[in-house]
Each structure stands twice: as structure tokens, then as C-alpha cells.
Length: 171
Image (cartoon, rainbow, N blue to C red; front, side, top):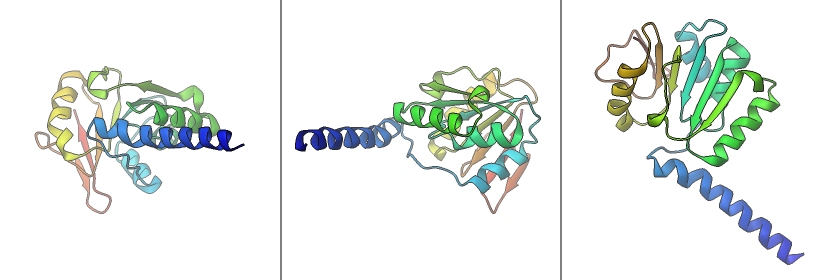
């Protein structure tokens, strides 16, 4: 019994370390956003059912579930952490939106964002400059970008919610 408990403890510690260390490797803390903030950010983007949202660094998939369930969007989460990808998939399945949600494991800087109608990003400001170059190159005209807690310094925000620290940009 002690061996089984030891194996279980090692498994839990390994999962916890993966949860924290993989995002940290990319310079991103594993911080989630509140549902009210997600909903406000998506409302600012004026989503239309059937559009495609990309969540960069999607974590446990809360944005993906809200986008699919409450707004009828097709949601793509790009996440480097393998544990977060598994949790995202489970959350989409548990909330009945698995057919509208796709999880891509990897670095969002290496992902193709050309199909995005809306991009959601809750990152650190260090990623802003690098991200805006990628968005400028890849996003189609009319695409919207919603950032939480950081701005894209080279772009003019179409709207800024001071209370929630949410920026809306339009290409």
C-alpha cells in the first residue's frame, strides 16, 4: 500500500511541476482570468456565431468554453503545457462544447493565426511587441484582438475597459 501511495504522490508532484514549469519556460505564469473578465472581453469583440476565436496560451480552457458555449464561436486554444491541454480538453467535453473546441499543443508564436476572426491574449507585456508583429503579418482584415492586462503599443486601441483592463484592437 505504501508503494502505491508513493507512486501516486510522485505522479501528483510531476503533474504539478509540469503545470507550472512548462508555461514558465515560455515566460508565462499560469494565471487564469475570471469569467466576468472573459465575458466582457468577448463582448467587446462583438462576436458573431460561427466565427473562430484563437486563445493564445489557453491554459485550462475557460476562455474556449465561454466562447463556444455563450457566444457560439469555434474556439482554438494554443497551449504549450501538456497538462493544461488535457485539462482544456476535459473542460470542453464536460461543458458539452467539444465539437466547437480544438486544442493545439505548442508555441503560439509558431502557430498559424490566419483563420482567426478574434484573438484573445492574456499574457505579460513582454510578449506584446513580439505578438503585435505576428498579428500584423497573419491576421486578416477585420479581425479583432482582445488583450487582457497588456496593450499592443504599436496599435491604437478601438476600446479600453479601464475597470477590467481589457483592450480591443481591430485590424
